Image 1 (tube, rainbow, N blue to C red):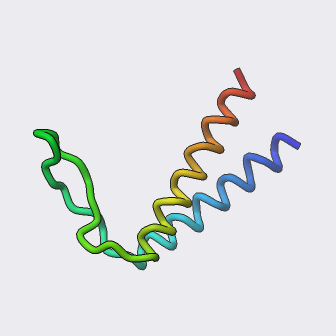
Image 2 (cartoon, rainbow, N blue to C red):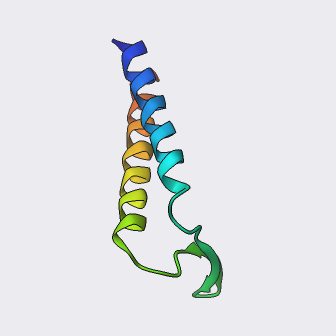
Length: 68
């Protein structure tokens, strides 16, 4: 089971990497005196990439929690 979860997560990360290639990269901007990355345009494709990145991050965090 654990191997299946890890393999599936790696596949999702690979898909995320592929999707990121289709949207413009975020640019460094200053917000409240701090440098951060922001997308210049605001479109649905960038939103999907951001949502998927959050899902991957959350799944990685959950997996780390389970392993510890």
